[in-house]
Length: 508
Image 1 (spheres, one colour):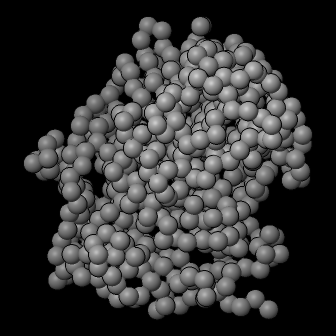
Image 2: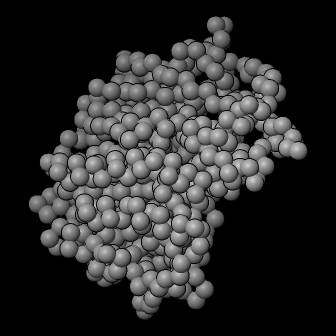
Image 3: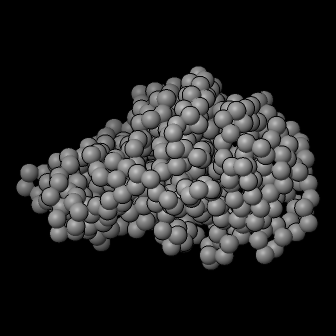
């Protein structure tokens, strides 16, 4: 018989939906008197103090940490400022203004507590507290300075405000801007080094293609997965030096389906991030949304909804996400001033590394990418850098060597796997050589596979694998809106070397 609070027996977990797993666990939750708050961990990490389970930390230890930014639906006028506190606090807020010594505007913030049930003998229950401020009515193309704080964690405790940081809103018509992207980051030296590399590119914002933290180490979307929610405290602390200034636009990977939280394992993401509420279900599927920056439209998708490889949330939207995608891509293509459409999500449509390609992504979404002439596709999931030729109707529409160019309307879509964000690296199939700028090898077909709906691996030969690099890396994209608009796409190794570059332009 299953012991209460130890999790769901694997045979049962495999039959239950994510929501049903959550309900099962909720009814068997560890009593809250046994919990440990994130403050017990965070206070020790950040201040040298410690707090035992269920105790209050001294007022000075209740300091904000883990600041991270995201855009609202309109990056010109809306920003979301988020952070973490180790205990529930009173009246959290943001102060902001045009100069560090002029933070005259105060915006009230929302506290979102997150309770993780304990597993006896494995981990205690944990309380975490995340704070979010929706800052609207900003001026386009303007630098603002801000500090976050609160009025104390109890009536007699002192207030606290963090050090001042800054952000810049999107200009109305930028002639040029840069964004960066990767997936599969986690916590560690390689992840932090990629953050440092990112800052040197001076991006307007960063796209994270999922598998954000790896608190869930197995990534099956099941309560039998190994899970440590305290990893999120480390992740947010690690990334604060960049995320407090550069908006991070994240989406949902398989390791971000944390089955302890409803709905569908996304309650943790809803607590920790404030993302644009422009998707088909912002309160149930936060990783699907859209925003526009300058002459480019961006669409984030939750590929767990269509994945054949890891089916924990397969079909969870009932087709609503795909219908929304069709409408959204059509609207962006018809919108005045939009030259480019960029889509990012986690599971790979085309890759030859460990997880290879997901047949569910191909079946549900590739027809829409072709129909609406998407200009660039960014995925994670495979912990390598790999880039395809332009793919049209499932085959190579145009070879795009290092330094080449492509027109999506004529040639098809280029797919980039940017999974070298910091987590342990993968390899390519045996005998398949890396091929990248400065190390180009003879182009050869690669024996690989794609996942089928019944969970099998269908063998295929990939003529489309053009650039491969086994190493940590990030994607840098320069968007130009001159007389001849173009995307100048580069991939950078952690030491800053360029390992790939190509251009996307219309009529080129």
